Amino acid sequence: MASASLYETDFYAWTQEQVSLLCNEQWSQIDLQNLIEEIQSLGKQQRQELRNHLSVLIGHLLKWQYQPQRRSRRWLATVRIQRLDIAELLEDNPSLKPYLEEALRKAYLKGVELAVGETDLPKRTFPVESPYSLVEIVDYDFYPGEPSKLLDESEY
Image (cartoon, rainbow, N blue to C red; front, side):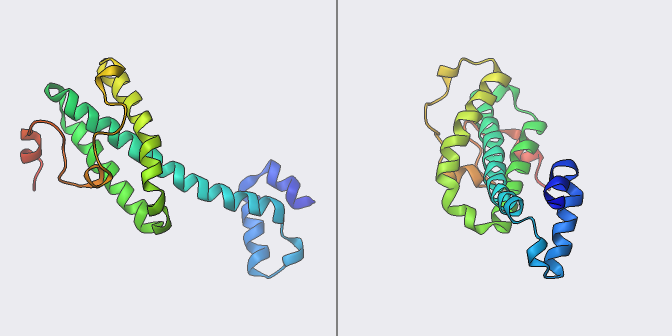
């Protein structure tokens, strides 16, 4: 019971206590119910993190395509960083790969909202479904719309 109370009052201390109990094989003292809940939550967080990165990436790809006159190094950096973060997340969690198509569908809706909010273009400007394939979205060389000098300038 003390662990359950600690879980509610000092989460970090609770995690350290659970690690110690696991390392010392003190099975009967582990706060199993909360430990199970937290492990389930960690898996959900990884899926959410993937959707978040995809949403930001898609929103910037839409902005890139639909407002070429406003392209900037900042937009380019955001696209590249999101792609790197997605690649790293999938490398660390390869079991998320089968979830990518579902994540893309969910992320596209948020990506459109981001693009609408940052471009002041009407929502009807953007396709109902993603105009980009998953392969294109994560491809480091894919940038929709007309070519940009920013891409040439950013090579090193």
